[in-house]
Amino acid sequence: KEMIASLEDIGFVWQPRDAQWHQKYKELSAFQAEKGHVKVQGSLQNWVESQRALYNKWKSGQKSTMTEERCKMLEDLGVQWPKELQPCSNSSTTAQSEEKRITRSRGAMRELG
Image (cartoon, rainbow, N blue to C red):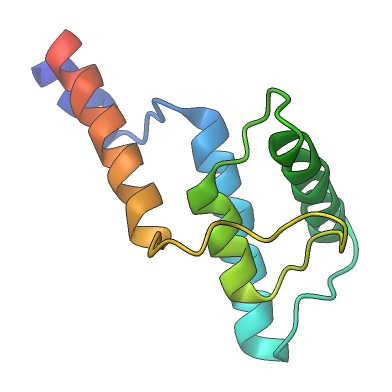
């Protein structure tokens, strides 16, 4: 447990893909807060387009890193999906649910240590 705490103290990331996703989400959220929309350009536009591709796979039943929580988080910012596909579930899932998933994952890693 001490080793895990020491690694986390120096910034070790247990799930780098989740961390990368959340970093881009934070950038998109900041952009949306400043500009009032999510019509981004550059690398952030590429990220949003890749989220749409992941959404398409997810909705068609293919393997994808898109989750209902992420989908809802992006919708809450104003990201729109292709018209032929349904929006995320109308459940009460929020950004907090995604954060709880990450926290549970970190807890499981601590237990392994």
